Image 1 (spheres, rainbow, N blue to C red):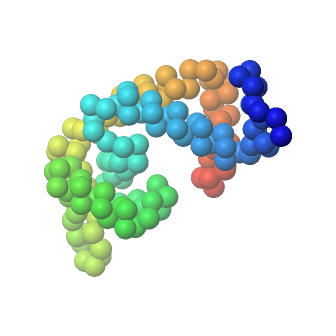
Image 2 (image 1 turned 135 degrees about the horizontal axis):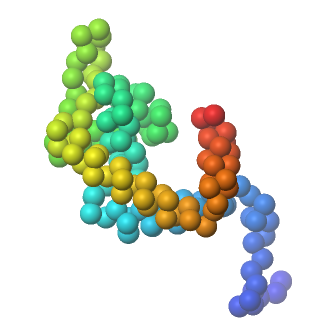
Length: 149
């Protein structure tokens, strides 16, 4: 077996693995997210959850967890944090007194209003290596890949 030289690296077949490139893209996106949106104090998953709650007032936590591919236990912890920070409140809907519906508080709505433009600016910067058509195709393929098409 030869040592890898400074000018080349054998990826051992990983260059053909979709998951390898998805992971590299995720790492790059998350690092940039934390650099670009640090002032918001949210992880990418938490930011997505807040935006979805704001866009879907009354969403149940199970539906939110499924939409974000997050385990219910993790979603419950995240919602507890949101409640403690005064961003989200749980209400009993009139049509189903056994469940709890999620709503942004006024503070949560303010945070989402500040977060959304920053998030989409970040996303545009991260996608700048792609043309608009390539970005559209990438989104279409990713939606298909995760079964959201």
